[in-house]
Image 1 (cartoon, rainbow, N blue to C red):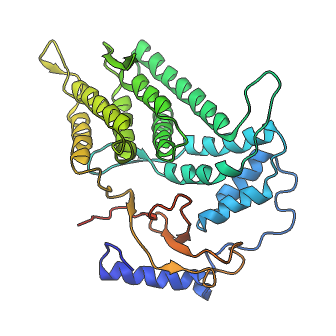
Image 2: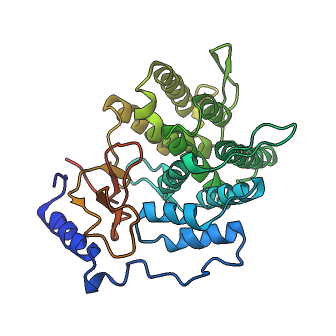
Length: 351
């Protein structure tokens, strides 16, 4: 097993792998058998919430498989109910603050994005007379757009009235923007839409591929949102020429805002905003390293299906990997795109 952890942490992982193999001490977290008709009589949103809530703490691919097998999508309304329910959970995600940069970030955004990414290839499409084809991705992007525009409208209203935006709206915007970043990395969010989100947040408009800076100073929360978005998409975007150019333009605008002054004397933003922007520049300089308290790339020994708890697997041919979620108990998840497994380790300091 290859992992950047001290010996005591390695021992903890080894013990939890035994628990995951079905020992008596693991009964507290193992998925219990579901009675027949468990979801009968529930609406699509209600059934989706039941499955999503029952997923903690168990195998993420089992959650995906349950949605595939137990929720029947017969029409456009069913598909909308499924997608919008998962998005609403992401939209109302808990928000934490990065201890080093003081920038806020959504706690479970990447998990929700993983679930949607895994579901997307198997979802049906519906032809509507006189309308565009209804697809899983179209419903998701429309829901995100409607939410984002509504939240931005509330920020604009608060700015016009000279009042502070309520904390619920602040947290929802942070969650939505973080979620957008995770979807973009999984190629469920086009670059053009992601760039449009940044344009709206910090006043950077494009005309014929030329960036024009708007004469406004956005709310500090909007700057923090973009800082977190850069941390999420930076490594992915810098991997291609177009994304590299966008990141450069976005960082230039962030720096301009962070150090802007009124009458060339009074700084418009506080030091924590400047520190947040500095942290993004530093992350890019270091090729976007994994951050303490967020998901960290690691490698684990494989946990085969023969070792997995009984009743928690449908495919006996593919090995699973141990996945630690939020420092709690091991989850198992095969990454559909073959990338290295990621693990959430709050407070982990990498060498």
